[in-house]
Length: 127
Image (cartoon, rainbow, N blue to C red; front, side):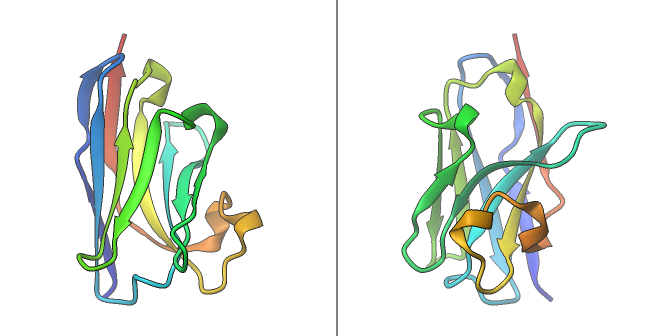
């Protein structure tokens, strides 16, 4: 059974860093786009970053550009999100997801284009 499991969340002061990990098992990984989304209570899930399957191109939400870096290790079926210079508004539950086959770059920020999701890991940034 295909599974995604996030880890690495926690409590950090503003300006600090965290590295989230997503472990993938039970299905194809290397050729699929992957992404990180985040969600706070009462709000819709928000796109954070994505990485394509074929050429590992990276895509970011404007508010995290220059602070967050998405990467993947295809040999280990892992994906990462390095988060630096964290801000209180980054506080959310972070989810990793695997895209449906053939996702287009124009829709990489659309949660509906992702088929499999982890349960998330909480990130809290104190001011």
